[in-house]
Image 1 (spheres, rainbow, N blue to C red):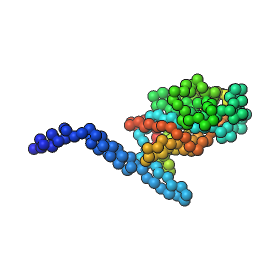
Image 2 (cartoon, helix red, strand yellow):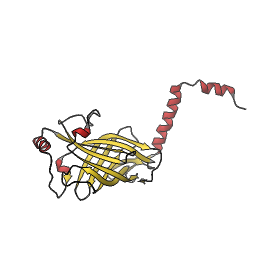
Image 3 (cartoon, rainbow, N blue to C red):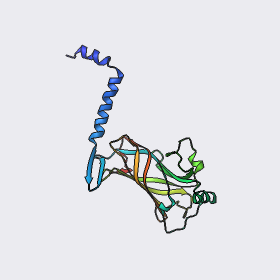
Image 4 (tube, rainbow, N blue to C red):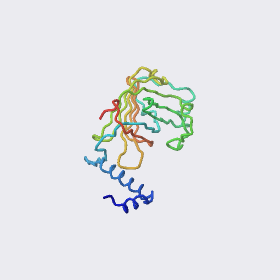
Length: 220
């Protein structure tokens, strides 16, 4: 027979206790889904199971023009070239993806050296950009081995011709992300416009959100 006293006790539990219980369950689940390995001088914490799917992400990092690799000759707007070459301004790359549109945007814009990173969301990045690539993403690969990584691949649909007009070229964007911690960090970030140019950056702050349903667009 059901215990009426237990029902009464459950009904008067303070919400803070209930929320604390949920937090402990969620925290335990996160801890269970991580594994740390050491190979030589490298210690890495990665996931045991890939997320169900990628919902969105945003990251921003500085760009050293020396990190842009291509056999082609770059061409920039005169004002941007002047500000960059004189050291008056710093180049930033802000990359975002949203599964509802399946569009990745990689926007280059200028800030004063030492400006906050990431930049305040109140900035109109579309207005401030001096160069960009927009790509339609048709494939996403999520992996936990040997690190927690994401690779997005698709076709560039628009962009500024820093080297050549990127529209129609294949495009890929890849990075590793932190797991088992509340820190939002990305490492070993690569942007590749096939046949045009590639950019590598070591670390970047940002945010990432996962979906609860696995998409056919995403593979382990």
